[in-house]
Amino acid sequence: MLDSSNWDLLVVGGTVLTMEPGSEPIPDGAVAVADGRIAAVGLAEDLLELAPTGEVVNAGGCLVLPGFVNTHSHLAMTLLRGIADDLPLKDWLEKHIWPAEKTHMNREAIRLGTELAVAEQLLAGVTTTTDMYFFADDVAQVLSEAGMRGVVAESLIDFATPRCATPDEMWQKQRELAEAYREHPLITPSVAAHAPYSVSAANLVREAELAEEFGIPFQVHLSETRWEVDKLLEEKGRSPVAYLADLGVLSERTVAAHCVHVSPDDIAVLAEFEVGVAHNPVSNLKLASGVAPIPAMIAAGIKLGIGTDGTASNNTLDVLGDAQLAALLHKGMAGDPTVLPARTVIEMATIGGARALGLDREIGTLAEGKQADLVCLSLDGPHATPVYDPFSHLVFAARASDVRHVLVRGRLVVGNRNLTTVDLERVEANARDIAQQIRR
Image (cartoon, rainbow, N blue to C red; front, side):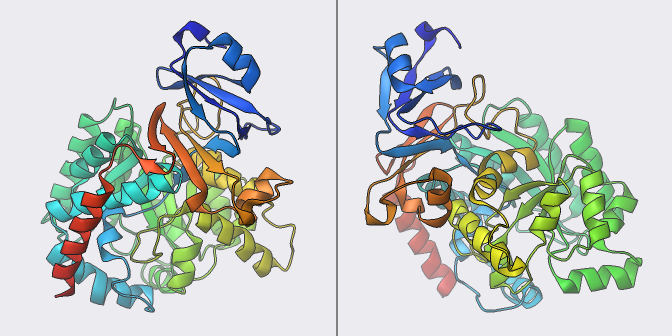
């Protein structure tokens, strides 16, 4: 326990779920914060006695747990929410999303869309998000100013993006981001290649080398659709997972989004190279891409987190809601109600996502020395009464709208359902204005 004379803040009065292995809920618990990190976790009466004059955040009648981690997203696509629904992925991308991005997603739009995404996620208890999109330096700045943790990348693809004309330029922007944010307290720079079918072998290798040079995550869409798998089998003679393995780009730094169409051999490869997988159940269902074999991945020991994807294919950034769907989906698919028990699902949304992103030493559980990223969910309301098992409640009854307080690095970014770092009224008004332009 750190010296209580240095404690800045106490979160007191709720039932604390530390998410540490084998831990039990702490009724009437508390979390002490010092200099942005967790100084102590224990009973409220004990910690209050040690620091009776510190700032107090009242979490009475709440569940207190690590903030949710969004392991896959394209943040500024909030401005394209609902623009093209009920379409298969290939048509959705090529006929609607890529043309809309080319026309509308400039630097100003990216900043605004990211602000909107930050507001939505913080209010839903998401404290760490990922982004693989454009104008990554602006995205990082927006996240930092709002006090949100992020794993941020400039996307690389083998054709022009709204920011860059060539893959070489995209790669250079990734390097500049890595250099600028390598020691940042909230932003983890990353590299991102769109997918094995849209990025050349040489560029995939360059991406992996850059990630290794800086010791940062490497994000990639992988085995998302049957079309992708068939294309790689036809052109390369092997599955997308095997293709990336043969290129030597898979490692513990890889964060593979989707992994819907993976064989037992593919799963073994992902486990062998310690790849993190972002499970995107809502996006995969909406685009009819399929259902990832998550129980088999769990059995193989793969690092698993929950991802929302962008809001043009979800259409929200609600990690808790997506985790809840995952629990039900895989029970139904397996015909077994014991599959993905509640605690396992909440682990995926917290410490599992942290492991997948390589951030589990810093976030994902409420433990002394870790970053003070946490969420307090209210247990008020008829849908939340009574509560027998807090994990069951989170997975089968709780809602994002139950979020009362959110702390990131010890900073109160949501207090009593109010954002403290984002001007939501301004952001929503500006987003509606841009939507009118896009609609025209």
